[in-house]
Length: 330
Image 1: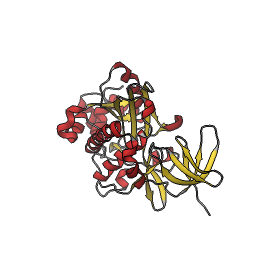
Image 2: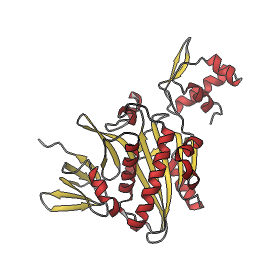
Image 3: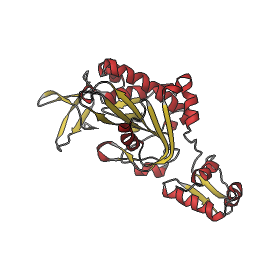
Image 4: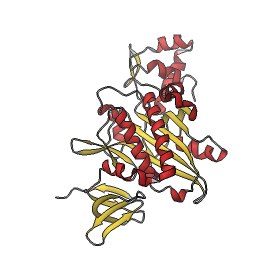
């Protein structure tokens, strides 16, 4: 990676214009070197305005994710966690999937300022851009096997709702199995997503790599790349949130929820999850992996986190996976 890339971006992080000449003088490099760093940033999807006579500017001010600032937010519990922040990485989940088998520490959070190939559900790509998303993965090692972790993504969803409430986002809802939505003037818009990948035995010890992407402030360019309605946190609050402080809040809440999940399973969180259920009583369709679609009305989730659907043909049916869409009923 270009060594000048993030130093130049840090100059531009205030969202104001800075001349190439000034930036070159600041770093004691040539104008060509600055231009190359700008070009490399644009290749990574960073939107930079270039105006003759004014210089370069980001589309909006940016607060970089910073390891020390995240630890400061966590406070006295910071030593419990292993925090690592990348400037650029393909996927935080990929990194932990590779490192976890080598003994990477329990309770690790790996975050990045730019993610080039983020992983979404069912092989999709999670779209992210500098300053517009909070993108990280969390490694938690369980003493029980993967077979006992049903409902884990739902428990993580409850944890995120708790964290969002602490930054005054009170209207967030959960969509089974792992999306967080905001009802914006009657339209459900995606605020965050969860992707969990498991390693280890079905019955022995296991490790969960919990990938989380949260929209902070989406540009028109970013919205055009997302295949569903989406919204950022900063559209839901009066004051912009500090992503470093918010990540510290999330890490502490995650640790509390995951420890409780380890001892009590999802059943402990069932009622709380139901209270945020965006699908409850809604007419839905659920698309299964074999291509079959089931239509019915969402009833909620059972104590293992499976979705219960009331169908006309078969009564209540239970699903542990599937892609759910809310249907408009005339």
